[in-house]
Length: 165
Image (tube, rainbow, N blue to C red; front, side):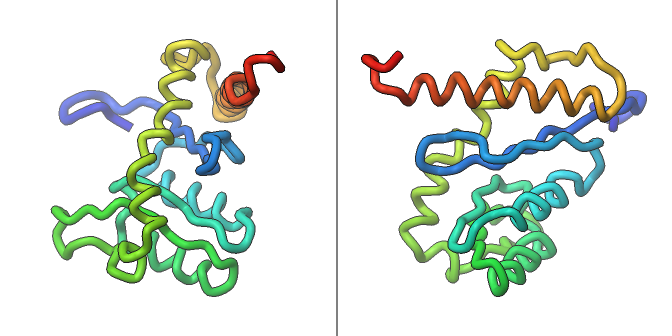
């Protein structure tokens, strides 16, 4: 992956998390090599583990016909509803239509969407993931999962009442 035009390519990784809406706890995390489709592929893999009736919230980068169609196919078998942010500026328009946007749950999902980025900010500032100390997918994945587990523990501690701390 390269940071821009004219810069050299170097090995990069992409972290993926699956968060539950109510308390902002992470329920799944993974790290993959950065490819053009790594985010969507990881989201689909994580969606197959969701229980029936779940919603999958994602940002504008996931608003592609292929991704939404796969989730809607999963919707038939697993009852997973895609709550992907609409990217109205892309050619061809958004893949998310009125079937999804008309529900109040979709609006709530979009309002709390910033919660998804909090674990990554915490991991970079406190967890030491701004620059990895390891080489190789296996070791970097282990470090990523360790930091995300620590984030979950901190999140759970902050959800407890003051007297229980």
